[in-house]
Length: 226
Image (cartoon, rainbow, N blue to C red; front, side, top):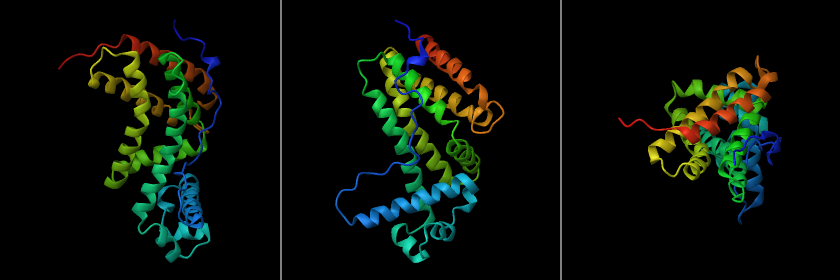
């Protein structure tokens, strides 16, 4: 049965957490709290002021820490940014995994859920400010490029799992093509219909168009062998 009633999505209007941290297993809990405080402060600077504000001194000041206390937890800026982006994508993975666990739903229902969650998240200030900045930086900074590629590879895993279920006849490259196309199509809406962008008010209808299109593409795609 085709999935067309997008208004019945179980995860509609659920917000993705800003960051998600691993469960605290032993160790000194104060240390975990401090690391989380540092990463939250770094995210706030990234959202409000951009990547250039992410200096160790600015982050330390935002946390009320001495620079030596900060480097005790994160020895380098690169280590801190890697942990920040890991916590950022982990928040998405938690929600995607929750959707994938609804195995009693049709795979097209789960695809609509995942895509709807991403498209709604695009309208947040965090997502609209952070991701386009990372895209631009990735053109000139090898470290950022590698982190961004890792981030999106992890984010596409849920799409790949659903596409594989919907299209077991496709080879791995065909499934990757579909997952990549869907991911790129959604991300592209950020600069047009994201937070305070010109078409933000039309995002609800754009979401419906996108999901209906993705469902149809996954069902009908035929890979051209080269």
